[in-house]
Length: 73
Length: 302
Image 1 (cartoon, each protein chain N blue to C red):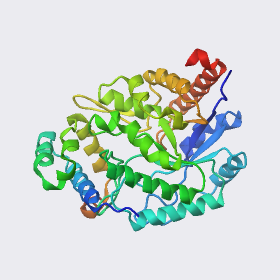
Image 2: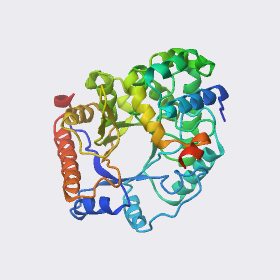
Image 3: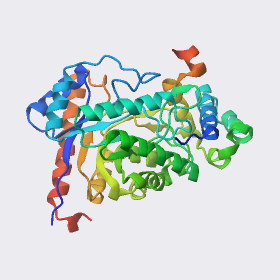
Image 4: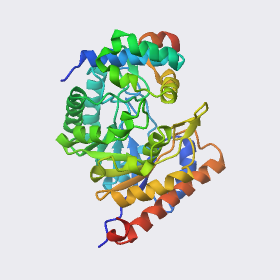
């Protein structure tokens, strides 16, 4: 099995950021400086504000597990 | 010469509103094929444990399976997650059991990921296109193919975070699908959603996908998320928009290996008679578009 711990951590950090539903300017600042996003910095810098907002809405709706389990389940 | 016309079918839902909407189509013998959410019984649980499902659809599934016209479509595997979890391992085991028990023509899943860290479920999101994610996707597709023991494929993802998630998605999909000779589920509404949200030309974007791999085509509607700018969502909760039909025609003309076309709609959105009639009208329109596309000589539609 291929397990990519770095990608998993990146995906979890992105999930948690989206679930916070921050205004895009605040989210973009975190994406630009948080070491959790170092591995794919160029990709996250290309995020579109409107698409980020939509993904955050969907994420907040669908997320289950982790901290979200205590907040939404 | 003419191409073989694909089947036209429905994404099957066990809910009463779908049954009320679709029953006249079944009674008239118009539904050639069924797409079943193959992991509906175990996918939406934190540990892939089985939930009780309505038994009455089994006769439908068996009837279509007997005609080799039952197609499996998974939702919950999370193909591009960095970590392979016990939940996913159990999902694969259950898929193998289901495919051994019932005849499916092929099995597909979704491009993207939703499981990460402690989060087992999420909306399906794009992943960065790198050598590592291609290798990861190839590994997951091999597991899917080994479990299904029949052709496997991936559906185009409607959710993007940036332009590359749309523009490079076709190449990314092709690289993941190639090692298992997998097929593309070309969801036309997803392509249109990507193009609309990123202000791209829909036809030009369509042509960036590996259309020679497309065996299955999806047609659906969606909704708009208000805001400035508004954003199109692939929510399957509305009628097929008028703007989609030209792209459906273009897809039908450009996919040489197309085998089946499914109209999709979400359960719980067909409660009133008008919505039920609209689903039937959309289905008949899909059928008419397929008939028109495949009645014409291939040179005329290329």
